[in-house]
Every structure is written in C-alpha cells, then in structure tokens.
Image 1 (cartoon, rainbow, N blue to C red):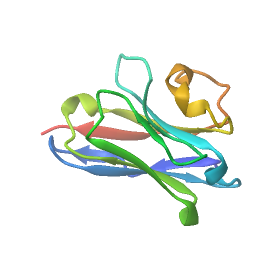
Image 2: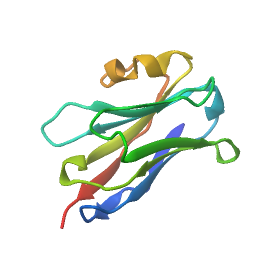
Image 3: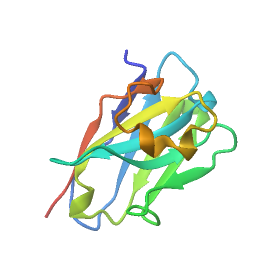
Length: 130
C-alpha cells in the first residue's frame, strides 16, 4: 500500500462541504508535519493547509482561511481537511504530503512542486459545481 492515501473527494454543489482524509501506512504520521496542496486545471499546485507535529499548530492559505480546517486523528494515523462553504474555485486535485522537518509547515507552500518532501499522496479530485 502507498505510504499516503487520500480519499473523500467528489462532486459537491457550491456552499457544500467535504472532508478529505490522508491516511498513512508504514509510518507514524504524528511525527510528521502534514500539508494539503491543490492543483486546479491550468494552474500550479499551491499549499492549502498544514498541521505541525510539535503541537498541532495550523497554517492556512488566505483563500481558504475560515472555511477549511486541518486536523489529525492519531489513533487512525490520519490527517483530515474539512472543507466548508465550498466555491467553484476550490475545484482541484487535492494531495497531501508529509515531512519529518518540525519546521516544515513554516515553509510548506514553497515545496508544492518539490520531490524533497518525505511523502506525497496520489491525490483526490474535488469538483464544486451546480
């Protein structure tokens, strides 16, 4: 099984909600900073949210602040992205990544296209449309 697997994507109407999951296999996600990224058609991948391993501090892109919430469930070795009040511009492939650097969340947005992150998931499609 792949080290990181995303799930929970789908088609939702504007204003609706989705919860994405990023499940780890073969390693303990609690020891890693974990981030969510997205790539819309014709656009570059961008960082959306990040949660630290040290104290579960969270970071958000301005475009999703107040609408998205990142959290982790240690028992399930999973990080979630709760997405509320979805907009058509949120349509994208969403991927999660993890890095052992305890400061990674402070610069995770710069790693959107980096192969240096310790783990990347394959992505899940989110489509917001009426």
